[in-house]
Length: 439
Image (tube, rainbow, N blue to C red; front, side, top):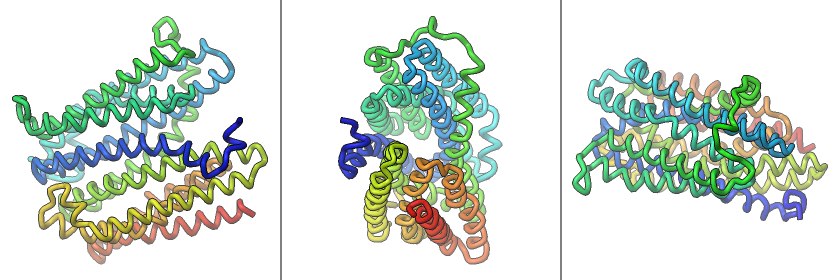
């Protein structure tokens, strides 16, 4: 039975989205746990790691964007039974992982001071952030190659192994965090450096697991240098699809950088609060992104098969799931903001800035969930440009100027309402576009 065409829609959406949701939530969870342990060192340590977050998101954006182009080409060659081309493409993907890692190693060593000077002049925070960012960029090849292995699993229909890779990496990171940060079991107390080392060890282990799974389980492909023949054509094909994907993924990174620049003149704690909020909210975002990642192929397939009724049903059910997840998140943020912040060893200053921030921004969650689902639906229906416009508006074009203006003239607490206004406007536009398609 072709499940895309015949399986009951609700069951199809849940069965396809659940493994992705689990993988993504694991990633969000270990980011939160990492920050919780770092916060126990000092507020300066948490601020330092918060300043490094945009660099990490840029690395992930480039890794995921490259992997999208790689996955598209690899899946095509596998579908055409061109296994020599598929193997060569795989080897190019792994090579690109090393090259991208080398680029970030150089950037981290040479320009981390310049980057950090945009946000703070506190020498202790800069020193801690430099330590963290340099360790993460020095070994960043692991995360680039790990994501290539994840796309190999997807292209060969073995996405279930992604949970093994990501789960193992996250668990190793979480276990090592307190051991290396606080110097348990006779090890030296390493502080922020320990957090960074735990992160890169987790990523390296996930990469190794990906290599072993590919070598042992993926029979269609063979990791070996004799399958490699350097090809500009393959690189061009990868980045023809990959560059737009990188740009889409990078929107979040730029939004974080601009938000930090807006918040820096207010206080370092304001940046910390925003980082904590974003890691908490990312927990919800990842769940919705799991749904949208499953939704895109379902809608695209059924639209192509002239089953518009199934495509519409999938979109509507995904929207209901998304609204439910975001509504639960809103309730938690409204009722328990102090408890959420307490996980990060909050002091009075963090409570003073953080409680209003969490309560106000969470009012935008349901709108954000609707926009995310409709953006995915528009992509699946060949309306990628419209989806891009909505994404840019949500995270840059409307949000950043509005936040800057409100905070400049009315203060930080009013400034958080920019998230609510932005998400409401973008949801209304998304629904307008959706109604046009539905007709």
